[in-house]
Length: 329
Image (cartoon, rainbow, N blue to C red; front, side, top):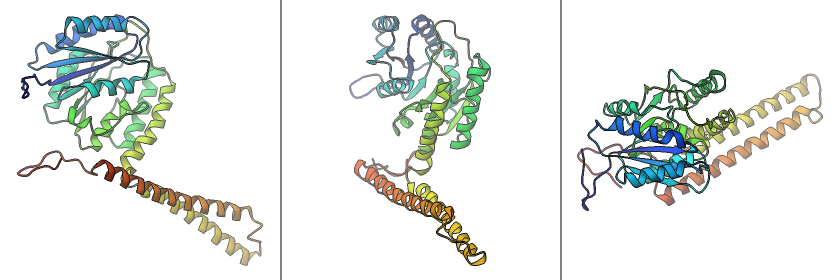
């Protein structure tokens, strides 16, 4: 269904975002497949190619697409290679669709699965994640590390998905404006979205072996994901209540040092061993100091969080809808 703004412009219903880095031979097959997948759907759509500093002829190919099809193709050229997360963010910032779908440019994701994701959204979900159950990648260097990372992310965040690394995902646009992405954070978008109140699910999608070009994946990405996971866990669980983390750690350290000190006192009066001469006493003092420092860090973090919400007018809640009333902006 097409809607009109006051100016008569057509509202975009679907935006496809495709980050590109040296994929010149895959771009034409990708665009053909996208058009074939969407031609039977009665909706308006656009595809945003985000060039992430390609050194081949990818930019020239994409510019040609944009010149031939002004209505559907947009090209964003980044000044250098910033990484997939930055490229996706640039696409999201320029997207006009109510629904945003992320899609790799290497043709390993299948555009034919797009209607499947849209159908799942129509069931009432806000985020639909692709699951490459039959993955066509090297098992030891890519699939196995990915499975381990997926299990770890699901366990830590509580958002249980089989394939966080699959780029093919569909989002309702309203949930993509409630957070900012850094590092390798694009794979955690479903976690951020669920924290904002989104209903998240997944569907099995097709996966094809790469035909042209080289994979940009390296094993060190697994370690980057693990490091980013610490940040995500803190932001999801403690960003509004940092004292529970720092205070909990501080009280645990102080409590453990107190137990050690009691042990030293008891030992002093039972076997007449000096408290001050024991290395445990030094450790006890150091642990106590660390505990108090953690408490102070918690207090500072609480002040920063309150300053953040109050100066930017951000609320600690997110409203889905209001019935028989008016939502405050």
